Image (cartoon, rainbow over all chains, first blue to last red; front, side, top):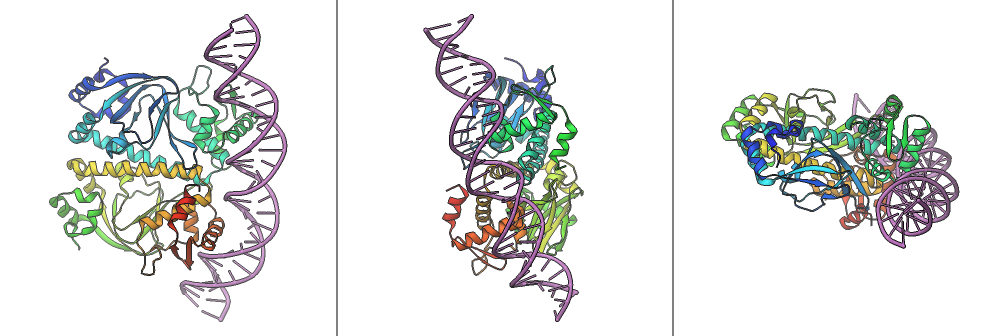
Length: 228
Length: 228
DNA sequence: CGATTGCTTGACCCCCATCAATCCTCGTGG
DNA sequence: CCACGAGGATTGATGGGGGTCAAGCAATCG
């Protein structure tokens, strides 16, 4: 069993505010596991009863719309925490999380986190800051979804992927998203996403090799994203 | 100067977790003011340096999209708190707030709130819960914006208004939203919103008398909102 | 009582959802 | 090693939703 107090991953999230004693306690009760690509970490309506700390891999967090299509709302990767919200308001998850590639995660039971929330003000304040930040980003997404065309949203999303994820050696973005996934991020039909991707490729703004995506012209994408 | 410890409004928001002493301290440094319909409480990019506690009235909180259209993201009313997020992450506001009708608000300076956040864990935990809840709602809005048609979104919005706001004596919803405001909530052109409103009226789902909106058939709206 | 702002309706056309057909890719088993 | 099947990727055709421009109407205000 790896030790939390020696794990560098926590430096990237709110767990960094925990004291050494708290970390040692958490080491004693956490569980580590691997999640294979395509596996469900948790589903809508499920009680998670804890939080996940992502040590490696990426997962997509989505919600089913009334119309029956999945909308991807978050992409979670190494260093991120998953499940805090349902824990805090003590409700079943409103979201579903599926591994996009093989993952390495730790699971920390609810009661431990609650205890730290109540006893360590640094921890709750840091979480508060994280959530305030998430809300701000959510505002941006709402505005984009409400006002931008599908083409603009695709450009925005590609720039987001470029900024958030590492690159492979050849320069392609290190996330294995299917065309359908991409469509479900921007909220459109798969065919529409595909058509626009090939249009972008024709215009040398991106390149596509199978599932690999290369961002070639950031400026052009940014112009597009902002509506010329 | 009215006294916070005697103000019932705080029972509706996180300020209810403050102790009597803390409230007395806040009474000493808060300012009360009235805001007339159409006035700007704060604009995008402004540092708010505190939070507003809304004693009466309604304001719309919006964000300008790259395309130059305003998107209304929140409607804030009596009992709500406004501005916590920018305060918590110590940044300029990303949103603009405009009074929809005459308002009565109190303004509490930043430092006082910060002090309470750091010293009163009940306060920060309650705020944390509020924000977790806001994030959940934001998820729903994102999914709706991304997946629903304008007609569905209008139905959803009407139901939201019906649920959130008081009614006038004649049964109409007690908010003075212009057609443009409604369009800016659902993220569409004013003309589209108007067209759909009159369609709904023709089908006896709502009634319109000038700016007043009457919800007649909740079930039909709900069916519409969820896609039949 | 003009004049400005908001509301309403019509016409037009492009974006995009949908259906359908084909091609490609990859894992599996013979 | 190859054939085959299944799921993903791609392209075409089509129709409707909704954005935009424009003109007329109502209401609000100085």
